[in-house]
Length: 107
Image 1: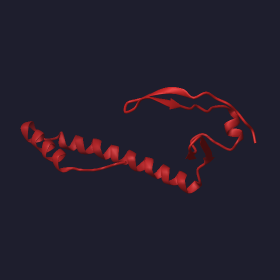
Image 2 (image 1 turned 60 degrees about the vertical axis):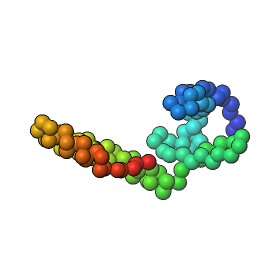
Image 3 (image 1 turned 90 degrees about the vertical axis):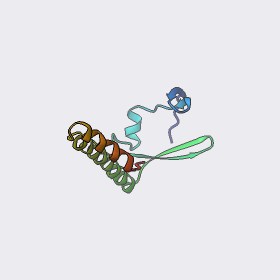
Image 4 (image 1 turned 120 degrees about the vertical axis):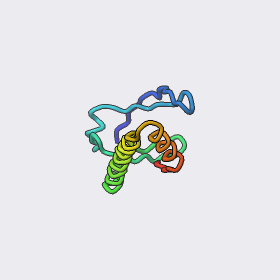
């Protein structure tokens, strides 16, 4: 087991103002089995954070989730473009009606 030390920094958050920020970087991260683009699992308890590579299943779920969010964004753009095809006031009425009826929650 190797022990390293770092300092907790400060970062800004829109909701909470200033929040603690922890940056880890170095070749040693790769040497310990963490690769670029891989997800990690954080086990958080008071006074302790344990970082482990996420299981492959979790990585696949995260990757699919990113793909779904990207598709939803693309569909929203396409939808807005289609609504903009209306002429004059009809297009505005259609957009207003559509926005009022559409309730999609994405987390």
